[in-house]
Length: 267
Image 1 (cartoon, rainbow, N blue to C red):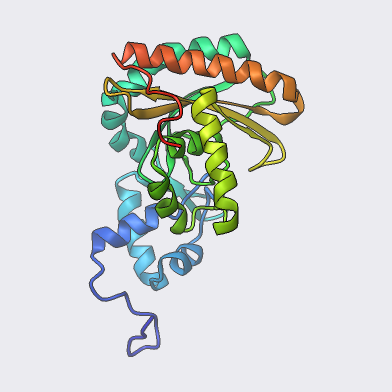
Image 2: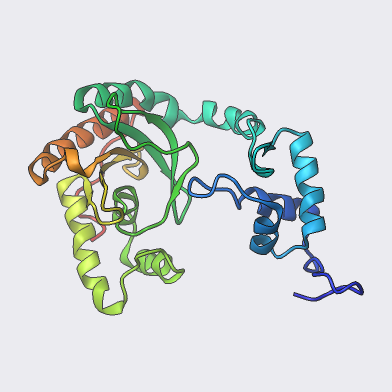
């Protein structure tokens, strides 16, 4: 990072105002919903004065809002307004909602629908558990950890060389070369079984199972996920949750006019 004549950090050459604004918005996450100007400046590599100007514009448009007690910022409801038309137009989301609701009622746990952006699973719909203690996430949450149930589902549909390419870009928890064969076998089991399991592997407190949704070509276009607190789910119950998840995913596939791909064709 270069400095200007006042000794301040200068903005990177070639970075457009729009790119900088997007970078600021991407700083916010489920784990860190509140951020100060200094926090954001460090993350995006801009001077605090530049970040303050960007935040002022975003705040005027409702894309961020200030938390008065801390004077830090959070994402604003305007973000939902922008994303709303996209979410409403997603066939997978609209078709899956009734099935996800039935799944949540049947299992008593949180159900969700996730799409794949090429390297991460992104949550686009969710029905929270009826229990007071439950696992939920905000829409738009992204999962990249290789042991996440939804990520396993999507990677199991990719050819081995594509999986290696994705993992080479630094996916959290990615196996090294010596471990890749074991991970490949795990993905093959996901394809054969029809659902993936994450029993406290990415979080000691959470269990996740996920199953693939297919389109009319048999390609995986989404994943149905069940997430639950680990203390409530025994290893024996995981199988029942997995089967229920797979049944729901098959129902969403049917409603989309899709057909399940052949098990084990990738691995």
